[in-house]
Image (cartoon, rainbow, N blue to C red; front, side):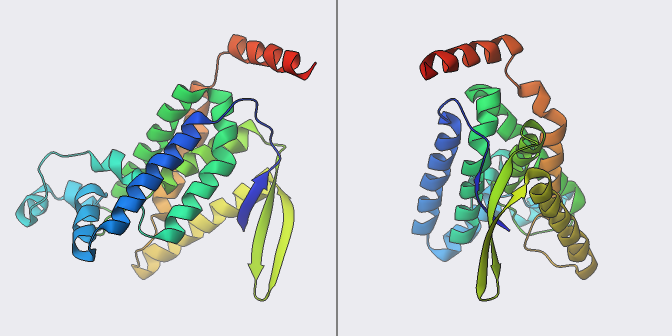
Length: 238
């Protein structure tokens, strides 16, 4: 199911959400200008290569910088292709604005980065021998989705389901949408382990989602700030 829009209203402009999409877009355009060999080197140096951190002697032998952990932050601003980039940014736009509304801009940015960081750590721990670079904002966005699920449990999501030659458009409950997404990630992770196949950081996605569920409450606006926002919203309506 591909999300198209949600029914949760927002009260403020999503400055950080728009800013994150803009920064990701600029970096992605830069990636497109790189020759293929240089782009691969770019991903290996700035993406998360789990074996680099699990086996530091091997990492030093092949030429990775020693004691450099910046990839755990930078990886969430890199994308491997158009579908990867557009899918992530579209999902961030749909769910990020509402979560930012409840947290405020600075808290939301810190929350987003924390979820992406923890997603990268979970991916590394669950795939310590992997020599493939993991890039993408999916882990951080999964954290935003986890927060959205608990902040807007009664919202609905309009989705697109490409069913063979008959595209379907319909609304589903938030719990249904995220429940299906969660099961798909879990199934993907189990099957990937069984087949020893790579390509998608399934456990990293789940790690980011779990981080969002566990930590979102610590980033919410204080109650008094919510009250002031409500008063301002009421005045604007009159």
